[in-house]
Image 1 (cartoon, rainbow, N blue to C red):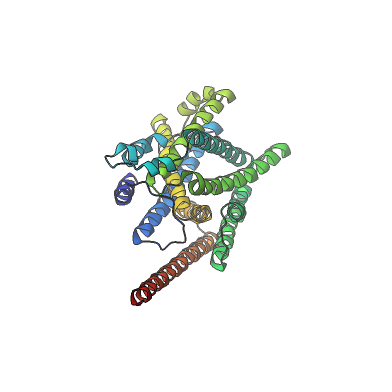
Image 2: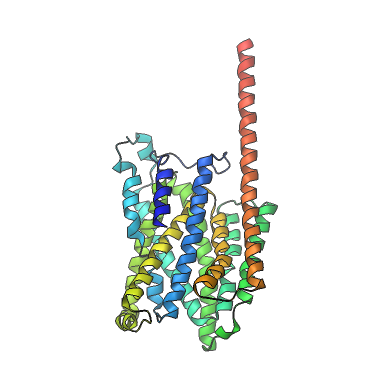
Amino acid sequence: MSANFFVYVIVVGQNQDEDIPFTNQSQPKHYKWWIRVISYILFLISGQSAAILLGRLYFDKGGNSKWMATFVQSAGFPILLPFLFYFSPFAKSVPVSVTSVARRPKISTLVFLYSAFGLLLTGDNLMYSYGLLYLPVSTYSLLCATQLAFNAVFSFFLNSQKFSPFILNSVILLTISASLLAVNSDSENASTVSKGKYVIGFLCTVGASATYSLYLSLVQLSFEKVIKRETFSAVLDMQIYPSFVATCGCVVGLFASGEWRSLSKEMKEYKEGKVSYMMTLIFAAVTWQVASIGLLGLIFEVSSLFSNVISTLTSPVVPILAVIFFHDKMDGIKAMAMLLAIWGFLSYIYQQYLDDSKSKVKKKMKANSNEASLGLTGQV
């Protein structure tokens, strides 16, 4: 993954040196735009799938700290710092225009924005941890699948998302795909917690799904209304600074809850040994960062709804990988869920292709109209 990331950075970096304004998504897409989108998709699917599998490995082998599981989802941000410096316009010899500087938001605005997103992520990740702790896996997965529906609502009101038949078809198919996996989960994971804890887990998971969907829509809105920069460094900023705030929040929670006292014992009793314990957490942190870059990149290039569509696409990917690495059973329901997810994904991609084709036709007609106007002016 690190090699792929480096190759991608080189490709994107050729066109990310200048600080240009945020453009309308309805404009025709260049082939380099498609390269970036495909790269972000690969980042999100591979990173999220690996992170989920590593999280499962952590719990299966003896890990049980909710705050540690929350911590690794944001603590890997330092690996992105070299890329942030490389893509920063102030770290280059390229001159920055006065209008470009004037267009930048105030430092106080950015501090508030990144801090708010960081705290939002801390609470969201913790709610997911509580849901996974108190709910059966099937119920938890089913409730997590609702985030796509929440995101569709938030995108409609906050981002003016237009729903074509293909987009609606994609949302429905991916929601059904995730729901099939949830219903098909093994009944052996029935919860033995009290009714009160079950209600807490239920409410936390629904709240986390809604919060995560709201976060995605707010990030897209921030890119369009506040950041207003179409650069890779803008994506890195949106990942690194909120992750720093979220990590600090997790550290506070880890010490305030007292879970830090049991970490040493947890490491010693880890079934695969101390080295495996540390490597599992480190790689989980790295893969979460890779997934987050893909997620934010898709919000930046396309929309928050599309990023959630790709995120939901990992639902059938994880069971496939679980069959390979954890020797889980593969049945007809999982295969059907995978086919529905691929169908939903292709449906959304086809809509992007149609939008791109219409934009190119409009641009060509406008160019022809301008040429005709110039011709008439010349004759006069």
